[in-house]
Image 1 (tube, one colour):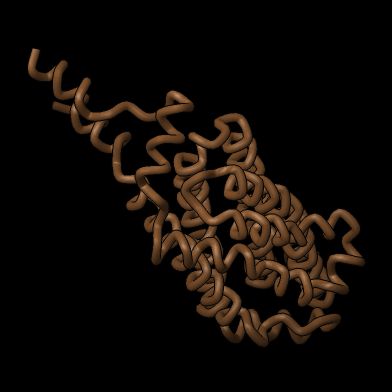
Image 2 (cartoon, one colour; image 1 turned 180 degrees about the vertical axis):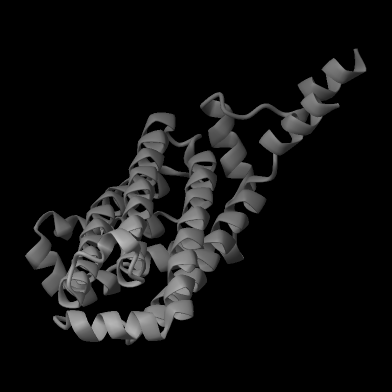
Length: 252
């Protein structure tokens, strides 16, 4: 019985997987937006003392932002897994490489969350930190936040490679419009953070270039994929088995 259930999950409708991927991405965006909103106004650029005061005065909001960041990363990991399954018939190796880049980005971002939460530990005044002056603790907390920001920009580089490869897979697929692949590949703006000053300066334009990612997600959510073409491409790649052999085995 468990084997049959696993086979049904593996043979789930590709359209359902596509729509689940779209829904997960929208959930990721909503939770990430909540994290940004929770931290809004707490971090004052170049002002360690003001930032420390804001964090302590609005500790629940700061904790909410931290928790939301972790939940958003979890959603993106699940989203990555669904896209891997969806694009595996196009090119298994490239789809696996894309998933690898995305997961590395998620690992870096989640590791950076340690720096995000560290200021609260420092500012709460643990006993072993009493040897430091208040100004030194505030400066240390601010440095941790800067390190979190740097970790986030490094993660963007890996997400840029992910977008580029997903764009290629979308273009080569037979079950999605090719224009979505072209537009998705244009969302590799995260690669500009290989030169951090350049990436930071043109970050608003980089976000605008991600319109292809938005369009792809909306297409997956509303239209899904052409299921017949997906199965044909999967069958040609040896990634799809019809249910008839399974039923025949069960009948025997």
